[in-house]
Amino acid sequence: MPELESLPQEVKDQLAGIGTPDVVIGLTSLKSADDLTWAADAGKSGLNVLIAYPGGGDVIEFQPISGVRLLRYPVSAPERYFNAPASIFGSFLEVLQISQRLDSKACCVWNSGPQTSSAGIFAQMTQPVLEQKFDLVVANYIQAKWGALVNSSIICPLTRALYGRRIQFPMAVDLAFSSRMVARLIQSDPGSRLPRAQHWIATEAICGGMQICQAALPMEPPRPPESADLSSILAAVLSRIFSDLDRNASFWQRSAESQFVPIFGEFQIKEQDEVTVDVQQLIETFQLGYRNLTEIWGLALSPATLMELKKLVRVSPAEFRVADDLWVRVVFEFALAHRQRAINREHLLRAMTPLYLAWVASYTLQMQGPSAESFQNRLERLALTYENHKPYLLSRWRWPDRFNP
Image (cartoon, rainbow, N blue to C red; front, side, top):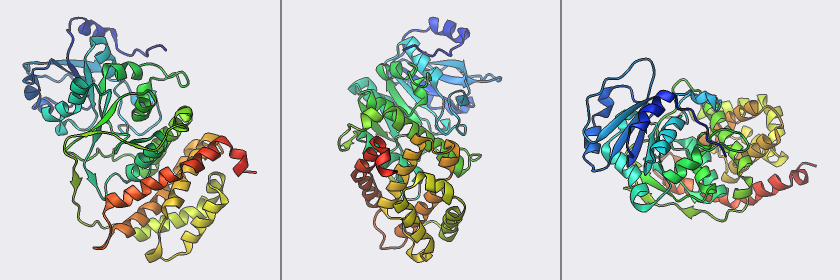
């Protein structure tokens, strides 16, 4: 498969005069010299380090850093490859191409804010590649009861159930790669003709038989840009997930029960006070969605699922609960509708927002109060429900007419 080359000639000329670094670090959101105060410590590590950063019209002036080389490259717009709110997934194809051209041993891309960077964090991300021959290191951020609920309710348990790997943040934007993984990611996908780096990287690694681990980092997961509304975020995330289900169907249909993925570093959980959530508003948004989106939901959801949702519309807020098996069926059935293109995919995915808010309302009601179980136990039960209901998705994927006479 051909590589998709986007490096301009001026960058290629610079690379010709650079030796082979041990590590290439891509800081995709570097804004000023103040963001590199940690780099001097990286230069003392004994490794040959190259830091690549995107540049626009203004050139940032840096003081020389012993043991570290800096390289500026023109940035490409991520919307070239997919339609998503900027910065949700990040764009780092150029960093991968730089790493491959220099034949570096490891490559780390850092899409979180550079103020969270440190020499220790980059060592933690790259050491599994350099010393233990892992191909992909995925950031494992601090977990919190009220944080990253899209990940907790959909992304993480769905990856675990279908692809058989227990990765806590499968769509983490901070990653490290071996040269073997870099070579895979810069190749074009035969179906989309886009670089594999624009796909869901964790599943690319799983399907490619790569060795994967996680690095426990002392930071919370990056937040989506404030300009992106919830419906846009959900549509972007679900579009990528569901498209990958199509692309990788032959793999996940054969995968067995989930396996533990090694974690390096000290796993952290953030203790949080109870938050004030307007559960009533969340429920009312769901009820409004039921009244206005029934036609769209009817194209995606089975009659049994719609009946369960109808019952939810009528219960009191105190009794409002979205059962795990109902929520998993909703996610699976939207995935099936996305595959079948029952309606415009953008409209379909945005119509899931009130259903997601119903899950958030239910989760909030369950997790409040002194007698609430730990959120980790709660989310583990949800993940097991995804795994137990995988045969339902598999059957409907293979034989849709059997369920839609």
